[in-house]
Image (cartoon, rainbow, N blue to C red):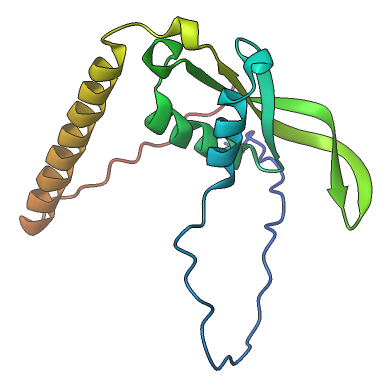
Length: 166
């Protein structure tokens, strides 16, 4: 049966490969911060943005946008009731970005963020931390079970055969 699923074209990664001999490594910048953390602080410091969605970043790769949103959810809460944050990646067809000094309009995945401090519910932050700890414990248990199964020579493959798309 022919495979009817089509793969989406992957965007090229922005990476430079080089072989360059260096005498010394650059100093480690211990004060370096993540750009999204800076954006979060700017949103908190801008009361007129509170309660409204703000375009925080745009990504050529949708997976990168989803990963950024998930990372922020782990840090700031998985729902607005935790610390007031909601993170939503969405595809936008006409985003203008700078490439080689020129404005280019293209389809990108945008990370939208809403900060609503009034949405915080007392006790939700503690419940969120408990959910994270429970998830960590379950993952540790799964890893231990998998390691034990491998030690006993059992197959640990969890992949499923893809069902054909209709």
